[in-house]
Length: 235
Image 1 (cartoon, rainbow, N blue to C red):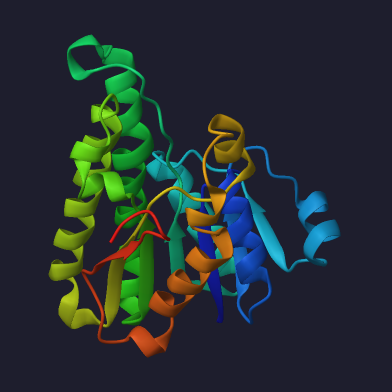
Image 2 (tube, rainbow, N blue to C red):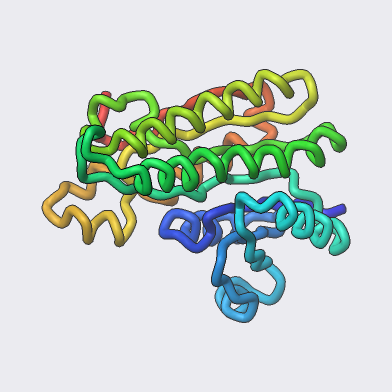
């Protein structure tokens, strides 16, 4: 079986950047997102270098089908980056709608839960694997994110989930960690706050370097960590 790195949320700004980053490495890349076309990925990265996988991340049946298909193609997911998520805010908690609250929990917490439940059995059976969840500074510094309580709570919940799961599998050879970026320098974030000093933000490639380290054997003794990747926004 050949090793593969899976990236969820591969259609978003960060996910797209991470697909490009890991496509330069030795492992095959499985890009998980709705709307991805294999022909477009082949044209951009070379035939078969990156595999498109359209999946509802909270569908357990969809996950089972995808993992079985990859195994049938001789691919073993030994590394995974859980980059799916989303941000919505703009109102204090007492004005936050139920729709926004449940939407943030679904996008940032439920996707993490179901992804872990899908990926861990295979990794545990092989006694090999590393998962990195993309969290947020809001999970550990929520007071700096007023008017985004739903997002901060969802990211804090995802962090607790990851660290609990990491403790559960600590003796297995499978590792799970979280990176906590501050604002990531993407075109969407620049457009949303054009007055900001972009040099203080985290470049996607810098975040990719940290994630690649955590996935690698060089980080074999690191699990359950929540690694700050703050750029120049925090001390």
